[in-house]
Image 1 (spheres, one colour):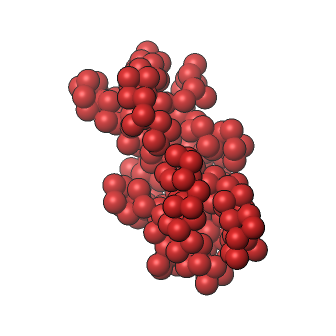
Image 2 (cartoon, one colour; image 1 turned 30 degrees about the horizontal axis):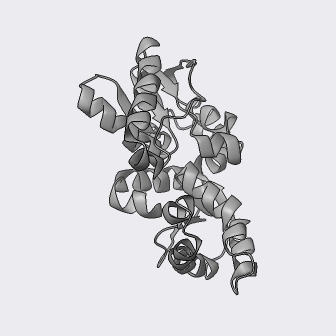
Length: 241
């Protein structure tokens, strides 16, 4: 199993990458680093700059092509970019076949962990509190992953998973969307957080670091007591080592 940390993981949430590796190993996966891989090219791709996206993504593509086995990605949006959009991005390119081959090996982290819930349940994980889950747009609408992260969270004793009315609503990040339309982006984040706080939860959990960065930024600005956590970090706080 290759663990691709993503550029956001490398630069902003390295602890999530470490927790993801620990979770994979606890599930019996032999984990190897994605040496030489940097960014999937998503920011440029979403902004409409295909040539620039290819230039950035090509380095990561070729680095991953030199590895074997599945590629676990602790970010729904990056996993979606690689699995769903790399074949499109590299269509007609010299690396088209390579892109299709690597894309087929990409797995979002919780999709991997959800295949090992019996093992996770046997580890005695415990976290006392109420948690809500935020479905990131890419995971829900492109990768079609909804049950998987919740199945992983259900392996934790003491955790009460509270359904959120707006769990499937966009948080407003959207990468470059938050830069182009900051007022709209902030309003969407505040709506999401108001829903979460109204549900009386202690922590808002997601599997997409981009969403978590956006939401935690708004929480820091408003001073609200709610915390945000990646699923992998929740497992770590529950005792996974």
